[in-house]
Image 1 (cartoon, rainbow, N blue to C red):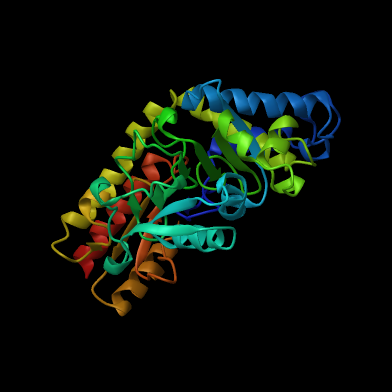
Image 2 (image 1 turned 45 degrees about the horizontal axis):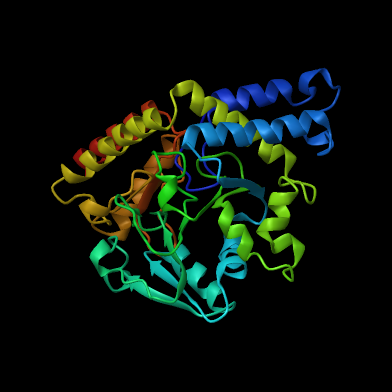
Length: 360
């Protein structure tokens, strides 16, 4: 079967090897006579999958023993609520750095829970950059500082993360987790929806320092309480078993490639191809993000006018490229090149961009 050249922002491309293995095991997982989505989440087979996925994630991201790994549901959007519910203590403030739409939404939800404030933002410049660390002044009464490490809509990414903070750093890493090494010791909590770099939609990874579990108040609804999920090993309720299985397969695939450092090298190589096509176009293509803030995951750019943009997207689709239209709030074009997007697909897109420019 001919595979699409998939540049969707999420749900996004999955490794072909992962899909092939899942297809093979779909009807009969480990001679159980059942497909993976038919197994009980209390079965030995699924418990092994759950623990294998956690171990792989720990090994790949070098997660220390004093951090808990949770597999939850509700996407990153539910974490916009769970984070302040569990971590925002009464009489304190939550500081938010807003660098895009998802940061805005996270702040909006946190304000419903307690005193959450915007302490830095790049909205006035249409989210083209990441703030300088010197601009970020964390309130002295803060419970935590929240950032979004990669912004899918605007194509920006933090390349230097805040460190040596006096409060826990909370990071939404939904669109760049596993794409580069992470210094876990500088984070209190990381969360990420799986559907960009970790697997299909349905499961959300939360990595948090165990000390923060003490903040989860007993009076919270059980499904919104981190400590409840930690105590039950992410099996408090029926988990998204198929999504966790795919997560395990993707993590095994990442390990087989050489781990996160190797993935980072490939991601830099892929991004360089597209940014070179933009920068060498003499203004035919214009990148949205400032160069120092450019994302390695989501390359955003515009053309000179809407007619030319429409022609570009139409011809791209005719050539087999999927998902290149920019987000409706920004327009233009966007190529999402997460871990699973093969280098050869990016090479084909760069060639298409160069040839389209020459023809127009």
